[in-house]
Length: 433
Ligand code: NAD
Image (tube, rainbow, N blue to C red):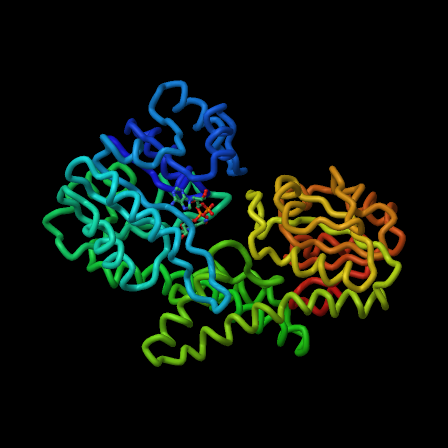
């Protein structure tokens, strides 16, 4: 099939490359000319395991092309995929301006009957709005189908080829053969529903996952006070099939480009119909507070931050990505330097993105974990990259000025027992403090 992808970010690029890998002809459009220029040169503008190689092979095979000319991408395509961003507005609502501009351009560019497939996460009613915008401009028949995206950054290619399910939202089930055909090679678990329910499935899924994280973090905080170990508690809970083992890792809370904005948007969606989503408000509040726990613990061990140097391991909001949007590290590093500390930071992939959001003379950009720890008065692990689990902790301890280790992701666990000189704090595990 001939596919046009509008918006070539984390979702659009992965989607485009994976469909090209399946043999489709894909044109990815983005208004960011710098991004398109890189892609034309064969360079992936984001870090995602496996992406670079798959981009090269499909570009070489002529199955994927990149353009800033959205109309050219849309012309000649059978399916147009909307994958533009839906960030938060100042009040927490989803900013639909990118989706609306994309719909306007698609409507103007339609040169024949097409299916428009919305992958962006959009509030209930938005696909109807997209349909109205396109209809006011289009001279040809078209249909809008909601196909929300569930991939995880860091596992995006694996998730695209092995989705748990594909949700297809349509109010005209007879008209979705092309969309079903497109997804059949990925899975036979295709869930067809109405558009509004599809839109809600995406928000409800993210809100539920965020709820599990805040829930387990609160249990972890209680564990610390009552002398239980959260890793044992999670393992024991997860064996119950009604609960399951996933998303029960205590830590510094969620970040990233989805959970923070989608939870806030769902609170607003509920608020717009006079429903006070009390549970989700608490989830957001608990998540915000969890970051402060790390700072409090560091202060307890290290005293005042002024004039001290701290090492930071991990800047990305989670491992295997360079995405730092809403990453806990942004808050934590800002707090430390705001209180007069210097920080030495290291991340395997996210340093450049972090630096573009937070650049300060008090931050030293290190190129390996040991140099970030060197001479520091405390070290905080904020992202559980595998690389950190493999570092020789004895060498870390020896290079530090004061061996304080705040493990915000419970990465080291019992391993730390061999390094008795560390003052070690991990989340919800009092016996290791
Ligand atoms: P992103 O910010 O990485 O990419 C969006 C891209 O769209 C940008 O490159 C931007 O330049 C481009 N764009 C915006 N308006 C445009 C226009 N009118 N024409 C052409 N290009 C335009 O965003 P993302 O992380 O890929 O997320 C996209 C959507 O998918 C969001 O709604 C998000 O909530 C959802 N989503 C994201 C993930 C994820 O893990 N990132 C997972 C599931 C769903």
